Length: 537
Image (tube, rainbow, N blue to C red; front, side, top):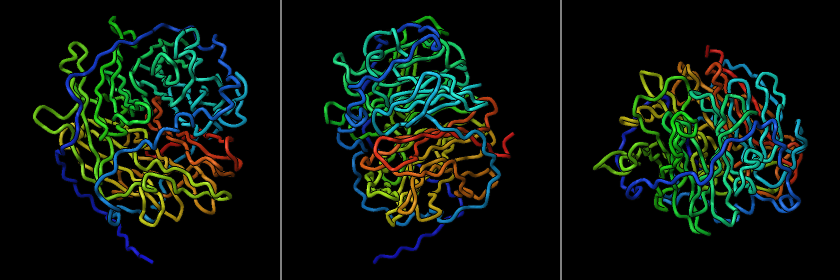
């Protein structure tokens, strides 16, 4: 038997930043126009598409997941040494007031447009909060909720309902891996999913609302790719909608592709052809996340969008600087004469479950995937005027076979990026994974995630901290919902979750993720919950 003594570091030491050699984007940005675009009628006037029997006869998501494990290439290091940031006990209670807590789309869910039918697993739950509404999208369907009451006002509707009458792959395919964003500055919804089973090619379908009402009209766009644009992740920025894909050609991983869509043209603020600018990276680069703007203060003028990914005991930060007038001046990297990215050393870590499957559940022998080989959505950005901050999380191993949430606050992303604080949250013997992190306007940080163990069903919980709390520490854990069932026969869980900040007060946080009511295969549920730090006003 091997014993390990783990220590908690309670001081903050700026982490040295180094320029590391790694593959970069080659040449100039590739510029392509949207292959199709139009403006839809109001969503309320569109009859939702109905799932076909063929679509329900085989778990659609598993058709995609038959590809080899999508992960970053293995590094040279073996197991990381003891984690100096491990928090093995909960911190003191933080004053947080729960708010809305309602069922989201899942088994038995009903709304004005009927009853939801599960077509596969995992659900890929994602959502965003707007002025008066919350929009949730699981892999095949979305629903729109009244933010004040939690009641469903539209849905459930198949995702491609948004492209009804659009014609082509975006209308006929309903392939999922959805993204939902609320562009806070423009007060517009951004909805997207891929279409990857159409004989004419691979597409990303993007719809941008014409008002702040998610049930209104949408400007719709279709972007084409030469290869399978898997696992899209989107961030809203002042000069574009930035997105990343893990690209595949058949079963061969090609590397991450990063793109930016012309936000001003998609919003109709300027009259020019809607285009995207992209860089294809080498297979050594996997799972980049774009930064996603929170708050009312924009980034400093001319600031690039930041992309982040995991490396061995470090994070790699890239900068995407777009020029819509002259694409030859668009860059993806950290500047002429430097390495393609900034390498930021962090406390040593090992991927949860080795990036594979080890999450225990009660009442079943099925182990769940950790997705520990990638950063989890979102990479949330905030400008406090006196400093800029990014927060992000991923799942790591505590060294005893347990998965835990590792979280970071990174400052000065456009200068010398510094890990201001970091922690590994593992307050008991259960697994914690599939997290999402956000920061409110007062600097309070919350992480929400799934929790499971040998003697418990998967549950949804969160923990938070205020700026006055000791660095590296989260407070006492709070429960959103306790699961009453486990997922049997399928290892894939969630794929991602979403914690977003309410634009109405820039304080209230909204979370959505997966849980189970009954032990079984295709009977998952989701939950939508909000909460607010009392110290945020």
